[in-house]
Image (tube, rainbow over all chains, first blue to last red; front, side, top):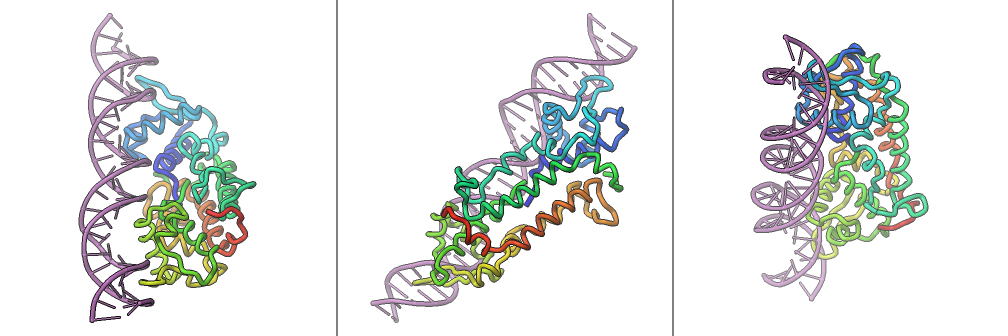
Length: 137
Length: 137
DNA sequence: TGATCTATAGACTTGACAATCTATTGATAT
DNA sequence: ATATCAATAGATTGTCAAGTCTATAGATCA
């Protein structure tokens, strides 16, 4: 049971940024070092988060990234969706294309329970929750 | 958010076997076709499930696999552990080796909540639960 | 204006995990 | 006995997500 690497890195990056002074932009290269993610790979993830409206990107001198909204308004599910959450959550364990409540696979009911809990968790937690945590980087 | 392929295939295989007549052995090759998993790969997974005591394997004529326990005694967590569940559940989102309650990463608290729910789900569901499900293969 | 800085874009490469292959072992039937 | 069947073992190969590279676009500064 995992998150994909992009998903994990996205959560790490957003959490790290949320814990900075809210007016300070961060460079991909600095962020990459801080959260221990390869810079070019992180760059791709930052683009997706920017495209989905949760980061503001600025080029050139004094450029970099900054949160586009207050931490309490950025839900984990928004971050995960910006990468690859949705397809994983729709996936049928039996690989059936038509698996749903009407036409369930043998594991549909049990798997739906867990998927629902995961989605509920991702909906109800925001970057604001992570500001309380103690240890940095 | 996903299960590894071996984990997904293991759940599929065990569920399928649990729904057969309880005295009938199944061959890897037949099972592979039924649940749509490559036979040689499935074979490796079957070995692990056998090694962990949840299947009984028999070679030769009229050989094959059969559940080693009643379905209601095979928890999902046992199946997942037989493949690769545990390391994923211990994983720190920040990649810290020493992340725990005493020394938490910024996401430790939130992530622990979800990991707890996942583990609780896997502990409290068994193959018995899947016998009620309707659609086959 | 030009020099420099940093994000963007996407083609390309790499490596880990998924999947296959080639024996071998052990059980059953005739 | 021996022929055949099916699981076991693990080395080998393939594939796709992960990670890298090269070039471009847009901002700021002097």
